[in-house]
Image (cartoon, rainbow, N blue to C red; front, side, top):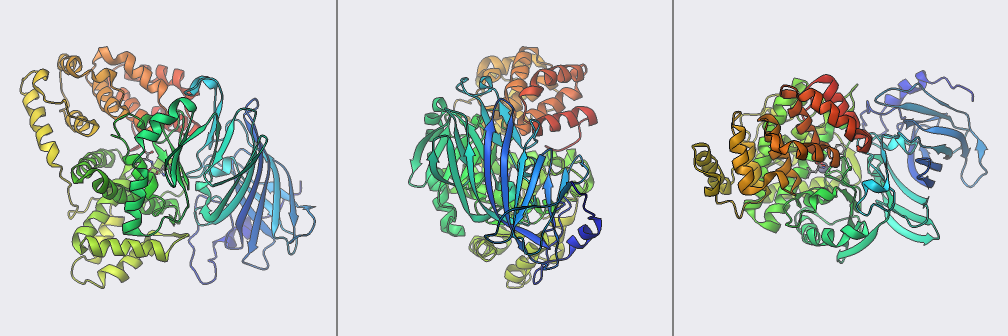
Amino acid sequence: MRPLLLPILLLSACAGVPGRDVPTDPHSYANPAQVRVRHLVLDLDVSFERRVLSGTAELRVERLDPRAQQLVLDTRDLNVFAVEAAAGPGAWTQAPFSLGPADAVLGSALYVGLPPGADRVRIRYATRPQASGLQWLDPAQTAGRQKPFLFSQSEAIHARSWIPLQDTPQVRLTYEARIRTPDGLRAVMAAEHGPVHGREFSFAMRQPIPSYLVALAVGELSFRRIGPRTGVYAEPVAVAAAAHEFEDAEKMLAICESRFGPYRWGRYDLLILPPSFPYGGMENPRLTFATPLVVVGDKSLVALVAHELAHSWSGNLVTNATWRDFWLNEGTTTYLTYRIMDAVYGQSRGDMERVNAWNDLQEALGLAERPGDRALAVDASGRNPDDVLTTIQYVRGERFLTFLEQKFGRDAFDAFLHSWFDEHAFQSHTTEDFLAFLDARLLRVHPGLVTHEQVEQWVYSSEMPSTAPVPHAEAFDEVDRQRARWLAGTGAAQIPAAQWGVHEWRRFLDLLPEQVPAARLGELDRQFHLTDTRNSLIARSWLKLAIRHRYRAADAAVERYLVGVGRVRLIKPLYRELLRVPGGRARAEAIFARARSGYHPIAQAAIERLLKEGAGGAD
Ligand code: BES
Ligand code: ZN
């Protein structure tokens, strides 16, 4: 393979696209300002024996700079066997290529020499078993325990570990895919499902999406309809419960459409994954990927569906230009989430969620690694985005939008968001693009309500603005009274918690003081069986307390939870709590040694970092 000399060309990658100033992305080697990938054709075989995807990725590119002689792609841990190029319908010819040095965060650049006129590049490659964006599961890690399972997680910068592409949210592409699976397994992608030929599944994504939304899963999957355009994919034993839990998805879609514009993706389905999925949910277009832990039976955790579905507007339609602008995706989505919860389940449900999130925000602000991480726009360059993106961008972003809503009024603010989505549909935007639009459409139109200084403080300051609206939930006044009574010595039997759900329990438990005798926890446990709760969020709050106050009766439950659950937001706080108590580090390390091989690479990295670097990191 002939090495190409590229650093000089790379420097010029910083130039903007004519007519629009595109910021560079510090998390990508790609050169979209010169040559931009527009369409992807994936053709892959799935091997569970080797834990490898192998085949070809064809990239259709547009040369924005007619002099460009090179296409730069992102990869991580890929084996690249051959690269070919072609012009229009012409024949494929070998193209020179080289892989740059591997960076721990960014992976390796793939430099491809483009012959004159070439507008197609085909890469023959294979993934490696340790691909950071894939998890290969043994049958024992699934609900059915019979068949293996594979799923991808591309956000933030893991798409490059299973597809060579321009892995930056500034580049949008359409794609088609053919995926061949072993017998008895079904492939699904976050795309339109095409015909199945034998073991070959085909897909098409016709709307241009950023690379972090390309998604694939393979397993023993069945489908159940929810409504005319909604449904659930899950393992056969799990599909009925999931369809019931998420039966309000259709209503949620309708609410979003009525306020913020049409749903532009055709279908909205959910895919229930095994419990090692490192997130609660991932907003892959047309097919949200979700943890099975939200299927509780009482719809208590369906804010997750509202959230991922809201990303169909904030994130998937209008996308953060770089990971610094992540709050535009998640803050806006969190705002929409609670609006949906208000509308479907009543204002008091939305308010409870807001108040608990506000408490999570206070905790996250205290845990931020750097003061700048407390702002909305975060400096993620030189860092792994997975280490920088926290609850702060979600909840502080949500509070910022709520602040604006309260200042300008709900109707004006909804109209503003509606036009933000409409006028920027299928584009990627920066924080500053949003602020300019806010200025033009709200601040100038309604002068005197919000100052530029206030906006800048919200977005750039590491201090929370003094103007932040503090949410209040009336239902929690009673919970707070009960907590105070119990702390003053009344028995647990006196707490009228029969109607309490996850929100009330989180409120009760999360606000207990630093010191509570273990015996009193035992009393609560005997009354309400908290150690045995099947609600993963109640369990997180409870087990955290159990660790802190050395309530030994929950030891086995702590271990079971940390081994059985892979969602980072659920397990990391428990590991963090273990690190805080005497003797806890050894216990944390012993549990991690047992749990590690069942965790997704993203969760492995998060917990490894926590154990190595102490209690840093807010998520
Ligand atoms: N897009 C995120 C998940 C994500 C964030 C993946 C950062 C990679 C990097 C998703 O929409 C999300 O926010 N999930 C939450 C759901 C919750 C807020 C309801 C989660 O998984 O906790
Ligand atoms: Zn989200």
